[in-house]
Length: 187
Image (spheres, rainbow, N blue to C red):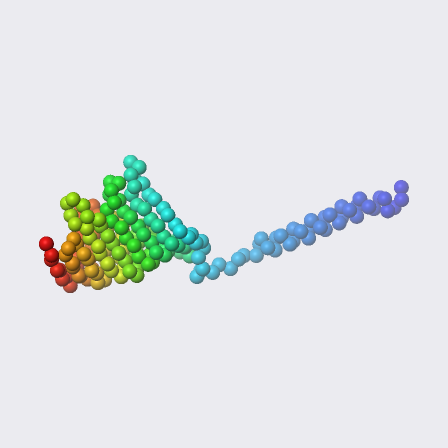
C-alpha cells in the first residue's frame, strides 16, 4: 500500500476534527456572548389583548381588553394602552373602567389608570347609573375598591356632583366623596 492511501483516512479525520472545532467555536461565540439588557425597552408586547377571569362557580368575574400590553425587564408591573375592564359581581356586570393608560401591579394586585378615566356603573332597578370621570383612578382587586384623590365629576341619574377624591367599596356598593363636594340634585 502506498503512503498516500494510508495517510488519506488520517487526513480526512484531522480535517473533520478541525471543521468540527471551527463550527463549535463559531456557535459558542454567539451563544456565550451575553446580550445587553435594555431596561427601557419592553421585554414583551401584546397587541389587541382580551382576557376573561371566572369565579369558582364559572361565572364571569372580570373582563379586560387593551389595545396594547407590555412589561419592562426586571419590572413586576404590566402596562396597558387604552384599557377597558369590566368587573362582575355574582356574574352580573357591576362597573366598567376605561382609560387612555393603565398599570397593573402584580405583587399588590392593584391597578392605576390615568388620562381620561371613566368609571361607569349601569342603572339597576334599585339605583340609577353612575358615570364618574376623572384624571386618575386606583383599583385594589383584593379589597375590591376603587379610589382617587383627584378632582372628579359624577353623573348619578339626573343629578351631578363634583368632588375631590372618592372611595368606592364594591362589596357594600358605597361611594364616599372625600372633599370639595358640590351636588346639583335633580329628582
